[in-house]
Length: 214
Image (cartoon, rainbow, N blue to C red; front, top):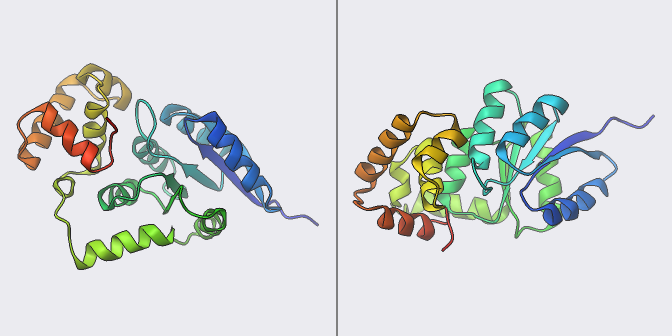
């Protein structure tokens, strides 16, 4: 009798990327991609509808990022198993993802076999990281880089990312279901914690740390 296998929700804002990785995943007899999503809000909606065994989540998406989606999904289901699948491997972003509730982190530069093995590990309730992410965190523990992002919480990192993407405080508030006043307070705290005075300096920091592209 064939087993049910591992059901997967695939979240990425690029349709071609989702299509490619869907083919890779469904080539495994025990994997089933039961739904796809292209943003944080749809990811939460599809999770509620399908309750997949594993969510494979990019964190760089328009609007609210994967960090917000992870937080919302884990708030609904504390046992949700979420594997971040990102082109970024900066220590600050990796730590923010785990802080938000991710179960694992694999970079898109990894071999497909690493992604497949990580999904199986996360489905078993075990943490998983690709080799390059493990090296980044190991190096960070031995020789801390003292990034300005280390001073920020995961919500502050998310707001910094959106500021750097050019979103207004009103847009950020709508994306994150916060009041504009709360976003303004976070904006002030980000500047205070990083020691930066202008939004241009914040954008430069976000670019240097891989949160945004020029």
